[in-house]
Image 1 (cartoon, rainbow, N blue to C red):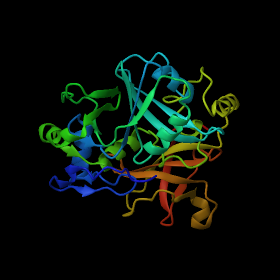
Image 2: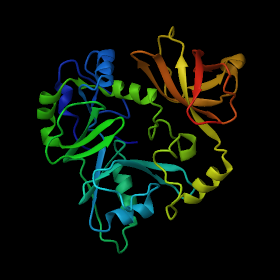
Image 3: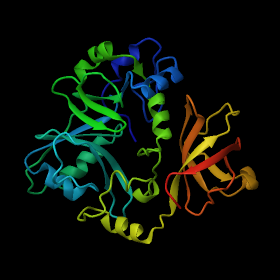
Image 4: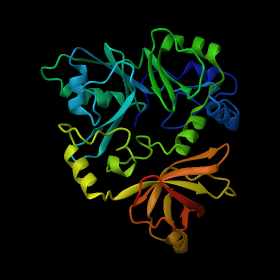
Length: 329
């Protein structure tokens, strides 16, 4: 994924701000105290600057019926204000885009991974045909901020909002980002946001996915795929694998040995402990994090037939890892 074209967030000038690394360049990884920031989010306080994410709008009277034909979710009759998420698949059923949507009754708002909105818009434009829709990249005008579940912060008047069990995603005019931060702190970095995402077993495009990932492997069937609709690209693969019940890989949650100083990196191999670091790779780490209560944790994508009770090690440091299934084998 490429970095978004908009400038770095003005909130990087806040005290203690340290810029995040790829794929989250342009916003703060933290503001000086990772665990304090995690606890604030867990307590329903503060907000997360996600202004590096792509923002796309779809307007026009055919917008929902048209999107319904292109994405994995049932949105043809999506009520105003109801949040949902969806995927765009390849013809072979591999995940290409993850979309986080809400419709305000006039416009469908969605945000995407940083830098991916251009490719998404190009695909959508290629499928417009005779439908009465307009697709626009609004990333330069609007920033996404995340308010945690339980937050009592008022949503700015007129802003589009995605209300989910995990919190509220607010599409805020980019010009109002600094004033919003001043009124609604503390600001929380994306490392804290990511740690709570890992704890909640929620996949992320580009982290838990590679070029051949299908929705069944990550648990996205439950949240982003409607199994009783057809007509979208890749639907045949979704139906076939769902009926067979045998995706080639599955997402797992890992509790990591807390004595190791270094967290495993994205892509580090997962192996059986008995085979050592020279053993055959059974999968790879997708996201790792330091959690304020659980310690070092990670998500990983492993072969479906890896035993649930297998003792695992991660990376060249041979970090011991105990797995919890996210997707049942």
